[in-house]
Structures are given as C-alpha cells and as structure tokens.
Amino acid sequence: MVELTLFEEKVLRALTDLGAFDESSMKTADHIMKKINLAKGIIGNSLVGLVNKGIIKRIVREKASGYYIIKR
Image 1 (spheres, rainbow, N blue to C red):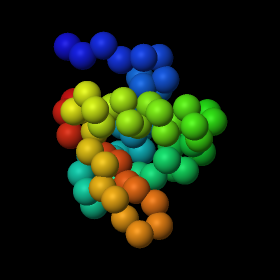
Image 2 (image 1 turned 90 degrees about the horizontal axis):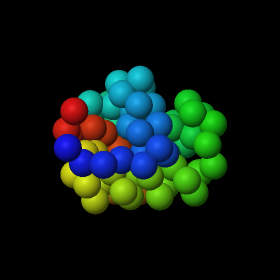
Image 3 (image 1 turned 60 degrees about the horizontal axis):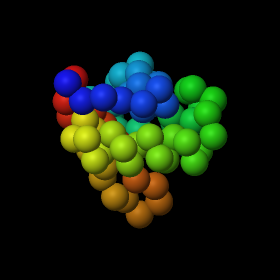
C-alpha cells in the first residue's frame, strides 16, 4: 500500500465524501477547499501527490482542473 501524508489522506477522504468516483462527478480544488477548510496551496500539493501515486486522476479543463478517485 502507498504511504500517504496526513493532508493527502484528508484530501482523499474529502473526494470520497464528495462522491468523486468518475469523470462525470469529478471535483475541483475549490470544492475540496470548501469541504475541509485547508489552504488551497496545501490542497494543490496533496492533489499532485495523489496523482503521482496513481490514486486519483486529473482532468485539465478550461477553467479549473477536475479530480476523481481511480484507486480505492
């Protein structure tokens, strides 16, 4: 199992609570920020870490990237 930082765990839990399990239900960093009340920079770094570990997927869009869980 991949080791997660405390913030990565919080972000992953927020994505789970928000129901971000596929591309049609993906969430932005702003959604996560409102859910767990952490600084956007911390959330951004955690999202990058989760993407690099293959746990979530990032979809680049015109306004804001979306994220969803690919490995539970």
